[in-house]
Length: 515
Ligand SMILES: Cc1cc2nc3c(=O)[nH]c(=O)nc-3n(C[C@H](O)[C@H](O)[C@H](O)COP(=O)(O)OP(=O)(O)OC[C@H]3O[C@@H](n4cnc5c(N)ncnc54)[C@H](O)[C@@H]3O)c2cc1C
Image (cartoon, rainbow, N blue to C red; front, side):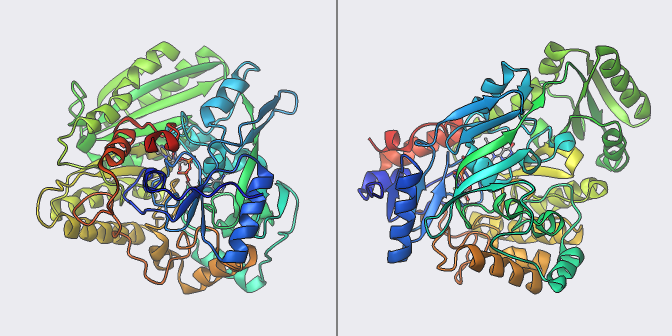
């Protein structure tokens, strides 16, 4: 039996927003409690041609977790979690968060190395579906490398387990011509979550590589088999401030060559909001994990010596406590953004671009000048070691013309990313926001391959239509949650959704918001 379809106004309103910019009131909400209910729901949707929107915590930013069809909330029913410390595998149901996997693994001295900042609430299903990453991805990659298998329910209600190393894709095969197109057209960035990972699929032939990062458009993930790794014994780090952005071109590749476990950047545009932050053009927070404390301290010394002619500010930390103190400045960034006046909204429209490492300084300069040109304040921070930064656009939404300015900023920044041979999304996915720009990045022929993949897995297009493959009426900055045109929902629910956003309360069950 499919789960009950919830269609009352309050429930639909509570699911109308995720993180990110959109408010789209769904036709209904279903909360399956197990794989059988989910499979029955998918069969019903196929018969009735009803679009389904898979959803975890709703913390994804580009609009893959909202839509006009039926939202399928997988954050509640799929909670089983077992750890096999000998095989170093955790099998986590789709609802299990990164923090829960981490907690269960820690008692065995193990961990899941990629560490999304949203780990407190991001679900296993959501992380696999977006190919999530985090500060430590500079050394450990995105979650793709750490997924051994996924259990899925496909577009006809078929349940199967898809494993790493299974060989030739079960659902889709590449021709020699397709392989050539992929080699020619996929940008060479360290991270990419923009569209189907055909480059990875071409290398491995594993169905798994298409499913990871497919943003709910090819199948529902009901469980993830995570690969775990021993927690490294020692750690040290350094904060390095630079007087000029141009120093990044040399500093970041040098630091990457020292095999750090994180290189996080805080740009002046964000530092200015944080009390007592160093007065520099940008700050890099660098972490090194090593087998001994001597090795960890040694490499911090190498980093400082190697960059002594470039840095305007240096602070070192030789143990976990010291490092936590050093990183406090990064933790203060979110409260600083939350303190902005209510008229100034943080909107994620250019938040996830990734460029080749050596072009990072150019990218930040391009971001700053586009923001200045359109008079939209921005705050830049993120994963410098991967050439990947997050950008919060902070328009004053009480000023006339803010939407037009945001659209111009969106377009200009895409041009900068294209020019630098980057990708529009490093870890958040294409979603609805960027579905219509993928063709500019990959060209029409690779986009044709994306459509073939979609048809192979979901011929009726019931799974998250409009995500990755753009809708015919794609309009990236329509259906906003802010402004006069925002869809009408009850005021108290709108206020609770705003609180969720302000406090990152994505773990709150959405039915609680509807009560
Ligand atoms: C404060 C904050 C910090 C963040 N930091 C990071 C970060 O460091 N790194 C990072 O990568 N992301 C980050 N994000 C984005 C977000 O947390 C991740 O994309 C996360 O993986 C989404 O998980 P979720 O459970 O919230 O999924 P949702 O937002 O609900 O869904 C995201 C996408 O996955 C699909 N999906 C969800 N569950 C399933 C499923 N079971 N089966 C099939 N498809 C599914 C949805 O359809 C949607 O397209 C951050 C977000 C916030 C709000």
